[in-house]
Amino acid sequence: MTKSVFNIVADLEHFIVINKTSDCSFHDEQTPGSGLHSQVQSSLNLAELYPVHRIDKMTSGLVIFAKSAKIAAEFGKLFELHKINKYYLALSKNKPKKKQGWIKGDMAKSRRSAWKLLRTMHNPAISQFFSYSINNGLRLFIIRPLSGKTHQIRVALNSIGSPIIGDTIYNPSAQADRGYLHAFALQFELLGESYEFQVNPCFGEYFLLPQVSEKLTELTSPWQLAWPQK
Image 1: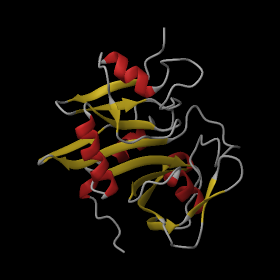
Image 2: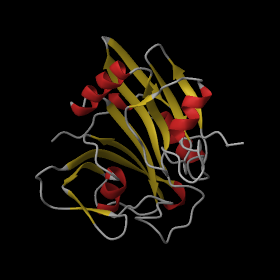
Image 3: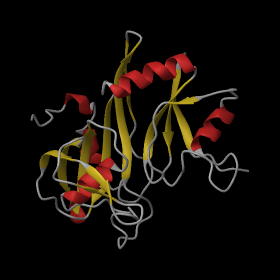
Image 4: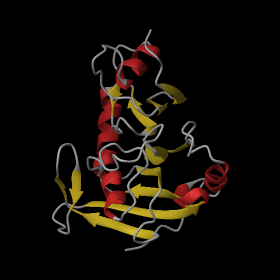
């Protein structure tokens, strides 16, 4: 029996929102039916379920699936126009070069599966972030990506000297029980209705530290934070 890799956050008329575990691929890998898309579709007993965005295998947190091609197309427009606000949490053991602000630059393939941030700005990856000092030498980041590039947040934090704990590509020497990146919150409007979703990480020894949990209580409704201006 395939182990469940998600729980349902909201099951609405036009779409569902799920909370994905870490270390789970979006699509099936070796085992048929093991991927997130297959498991969600099978669990809801739907003939078709339409993915509208993805998160990395190491990343836990919120993912949206549309229940029809029409709604998937509507979500596609929102993502293309950057009208879906996404917020992520990450943990690092390295102090960043700056505590908050913008991280911008074109991205290019590097060695093996890695990407790197460039100084050029032809089609840049753009992210905003805040960071907070946590006991035990940890640094908590909340990141708002304003573009949707492969590995964007992982590359952004690595570029400022704070690779994510448990990231086997950008921080391979750091052993951990999971990759410490979590899709924390979503905010958007669809068909004239406003939606807000937020879910705290529910596993990972560092995410569950009392000091991290306490800080997360201050980050409720992250769209209300005074995000750095250009």
